[in-house]
Image (tube, rainbow, N blue to C red; front, side, top):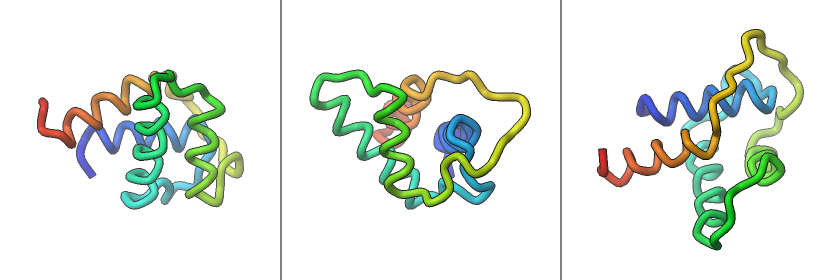
Amino acid sequence: MQDRDAKLAHALKIKFGLAPWEPNETQLALIKNAIARIRESGRVPSDEDWYSAVASVCPSPGHHRYHGLDNSDLNTLLALALQAARGRL
């Protein structure tokens, strides 16, 4: 996983209480695609949009708790991950 993808995956894990092994690379790609479709429609993804995207591919949201909550903005992390994937950085 690229560094930006790893940061996004970590932020999702913390924010939504995912299992330590989630999201994997396949799940993360599906989440990014779902959020990208929302952004392409002209909307800024809400927390509910993020939760829906995560819950649709990860079976464990809300089952784990982590200390030291990461307050990173998911939309910013996604934008960076998408830029890196497109070779813009």
